[in-house]
Length: 364
Image 1 (cartoon, rainbow, N blue to C red):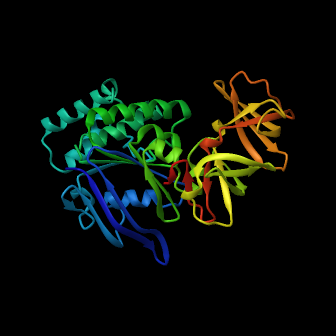
Image 2 (image 1 turned 180 degrees about the horizontal axis):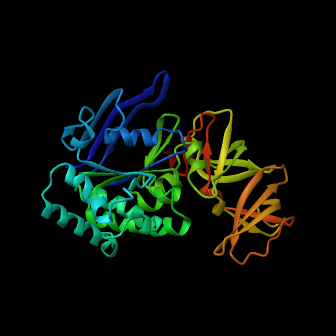
Image 3 (image 1 turned 180 degrees about the vertical axis):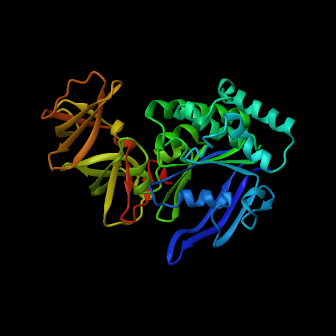
């Protein structure tokens, strides 16, 4: 069994707290992404699981064993770092075999494992080469191969794609997804890139300010953010989050935007607490370009970002509120144009003064 239980784990460096009472359950063969901004503690948590950082409080269990009191080599984990950390004077085969030789694995078993990992990662033609003869993507595959040969219960990836260019990142994401299907292993990926988290993970753990902000599937995180931070951090471009007032309209919350009142959401008033300050959130795809004075709101276009399949329109409402809307890829909108904005208000989110998110079917 290679499931993981993290129970009330804390970490501090001197007087500086880095992680505060973290608890998390990870199922066997699950792919989890730790997602968050720099300094949120995600890499520290990964290194504590690996045994590279000590646990100040709490426990970590892998399968049936408590491991936070074990050395790294006894935990049954393999870690792939952001830096490939390959030995430049060794061949690719020797780089992958090095760790196995150190623990006394038989030569024939080492050869079998290296050949198997090379086949899985399509590295067979490169086994006799040195790292300097490989591309960045190939080097990253060698680093992954070095982890595979250990046959660990758990794979830990610490921002493994951040050194690759955009095209290689996309290719390597695909390779990681395929690898996961072949190995049927538990994997944890640390990343600040939401695209990596959304495309690879079964569940995402969003972290900030030493704590877990939300845990959920990629679409749960995207469509039902627990709070303002998650709403603004996940999504590209981020969710529009605007100050508003709310009123009761036939049992549903109606918001005020750009000076226009009575814009009815799909959120029931009886699901909302009493709050003096509200913010409304709308994804750009819930705000479409329309005809001025024939839509829900009027705006002036400040910038147009053409992405091929869609066009992002950055505009300002009549009261000066900035919004990001979406139009078709063939949009004719230009900077300075007056446009209408058509809202899918039933897709709106509301955030209380404390930043807690409420959605069309209640609070997350």
